[in-house]
Image (cartoon, rainbow, N blue to C red; front, side, top):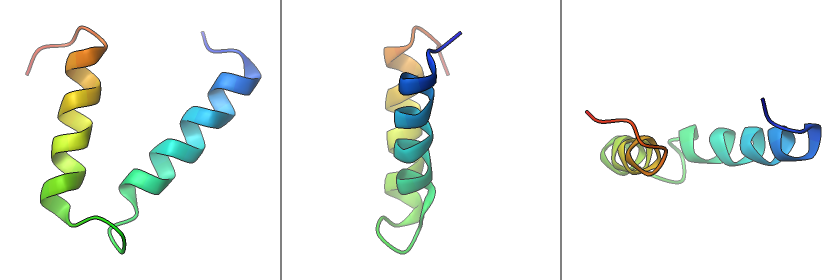
Length: 43
């Protein structure tokens, strides 16, 4: 679905966001929710 370049960029972004040493759990969940809503998903 994603090109190899975009897939790698997404993977890097995903790994950075899921790393709870930088962002706490609450922010991690909010970023995931925002990304899902941007993609057209509804909670």
